[in-house]
Length: 429
Image (cartoon, rainbow, N blue to C red; front, side, top):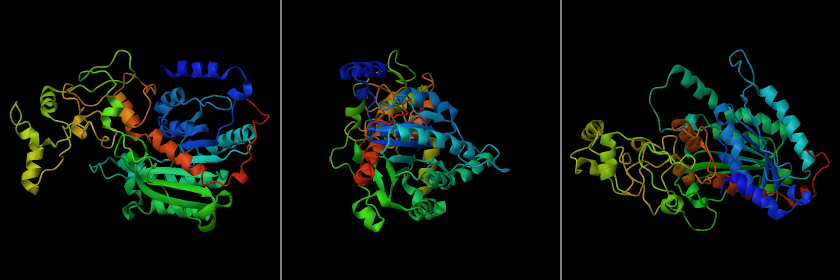
């Protein structure tokens, strides 16, 4: 059922009681580096009201706002603030930090009046590209400079924490961000939060342990205002981060995408948004047709079509005396979580992204990739006819279920005595 129809139906069931329709959220939130909205979707599903998403990429705006309507207070979508978080300077004239500070000041003040006594959460999930070792190809001078600046995004975001004093800070990044080779960015962020009066904890978790059908290791940081926290956080200033949701259940690829209809390589389904698979060349069709679920690509040397292994792989194997890049041109396992969904998740030449069903000779569709990131099927990515752009949005997203889990966890760390359970404020929109 389309989201709009589902929402309308839910409203009818609730009736016309305005007090019910305009219910108070569990918390208020601002999502920095919001992208296409994975974190925001998780915060909404955790019962929050997302005031704004901040991102400098205008191409994400429609996807973000169309899919993430708030279901409390005024029921409006979050404001999409397309802003550069850096301060304006001679070296960075496009910086908009001062303007963003003023906009957030107005919005946060407004919604704190609308929902008095509700905790304020800042989600700060900075782009991970500067901290990943997946791609080591030579970068252009422009991209090197962009990555250098991106490494400072957390320190710039810390300025907003100090200005607005949110009750909770939630951050997610690649598992290796704490590695000293990245200049101590993660540790400096932790120290900055502690110096600002927050109890802080961080750990590396796998998304598959939190209901996401995907092996995706990520560093998670949670910080709570020490004066408003309870238990260990209040006493020691340290937090213990959960490494699972406690269910003991991992969702599989099959249970997540088997309901989606079959399509061919290069086909776009007529009615299901983003259910589109990338076109394959004749030789790649033969490669994936020869692959079995869950196995390495060693099969390529002996297929019904002859030796289809890549010359470059043969050269590397001969030189190193071992096989490399064994996941490319392979199929996912049906009965396990998926591998990490990346921005190249639509390409079988970039990882184990082949569909597990041997009657479907193709890579996974964008819709399937989104499902493996824990997005619902009615979460539409725009442009609908896009491939690389949409794949980038999906691969860069924080899995909504992961964001939801840690938003809910962070609320349990707060001392409820500091947060009134009042109704709506008088300044309604």
